[in-house]
Amino acid sequence: MSDKKNWPLWEVFVRSKNGLEHRHCGSLHAADEDMALENARDVYTRRSEGVSIWVVKSKNITASNPENNGEMFEPAHDKVYRHPTFYDLPDEVKHM
Amino acid sequence: MMSEEQIKNLEAQFEARIARDEKIEPKDWMPEKYRKTHIRQMSQHAHSEIVGMLPEGNWITRAPSLRRKVALLAKVQDEAGHGLYLYSATETLGISREEMYEQLHTGKAKYSSIFNYPTITWADMGAIGWLVDGAAIINQVPLCNTSYGPYARAMIRVCKEESFHQRQGFEIMMKLANGTPEQKDMAQDALNRWWWPSLMMLGPTDAESIHTEQSMKWKLKRKSNDDLRQQFIDQTVPQAELIGLTIPDPDLKWNDEKGCYDFGEIDWDEFWQVVKGHGPMNKERMKARVGAWEEGEWVRDAAMAYAEKKQARKQKQAI
Picture 1: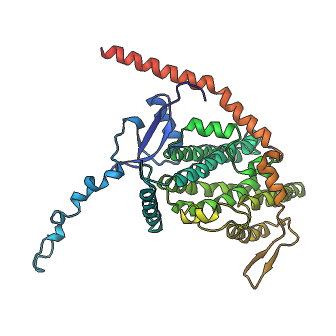
Picture 2: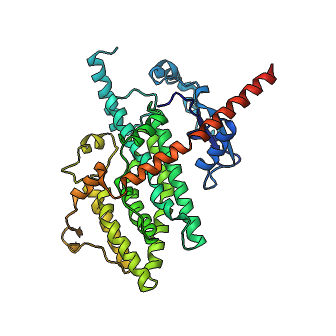
Picture 3: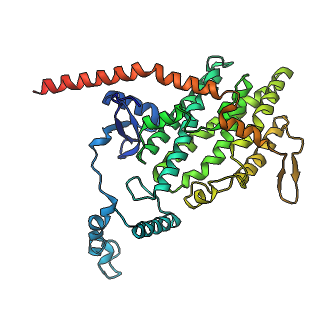
């Protein structure tokens, strides 16, 4: 392998139509952001899958570590009072 | 460092997650063997898509009509896309793109042997779409449910796009089979040459297949090679009959009792010869692939230099 600089990795997010959120759909290599956008169009929207694309350098994403999932997400498990079904109401109250 | 017992414990939990149909994601703990097996299979799959562009790329400029040309061009473009989805999915396992290319170019990594056969007539474009993509679909559909999340997601995209490939191939064959006697002969000749290699594409017989058991556990495989092959034959024979072509197998016969076709002996010596690098086009394919990579080097370097220059200019302006 050469010690040359390789094209960095980018994550691609596509909005399939207005009104929907951008969703992660994959990644690709590109020299800069313009090329990343063009490559994303060619690789991920060949059949009109999108109306808007975001690209972000993968190294700029901070991700949670699954090994810490316990302390990260478990505190929410026992907080059932955050859900509407926790509250008892008489049947006569039809919609609330 | 983890103790051996801790690792065993983690492995047991890991296998249980897969058994419950949970997906494994890139940052999750996984056994080394799981990582290695997936890198091997996924990169091999990606290489097959990339090398698979070569036999068909050969005919783009000579397609018989504009309709055929745009279709073939779109198909080859899809294959580039599929290769890219799969390479990036493989990178999530901690191998770099450069390492994978290196493995392909030095022959350390394999790609599907089917692409080591030549495409000598236009009918080969029909046979490849119909048979080769047909066999690939049979292999790939079960992978949409495989345990490794990024692989499963890539396969869903691939399978969605693949069905047009097979249909355009069958349409080519159908047109030729209904054409002049010369055209029909050309279609039959392509079927004769691609039939057996297509059956081999579904892998060695179950008795010879070394990876099956572990792969079944990890859902890298849902059906055995022989079952997939039978499925391919049973679905393809009626299609050949429909367009008046003959499957080149004198032993092919419907078995009423088993409810499927019996078929002749596959020449596995030929298969292993091609796997080992002695197929008609192995050298040619690698030469084209490595050549494209090397000749593109200055373009990749120039793009990177330009990106750095632009970045430096931006930073200077910010100060």
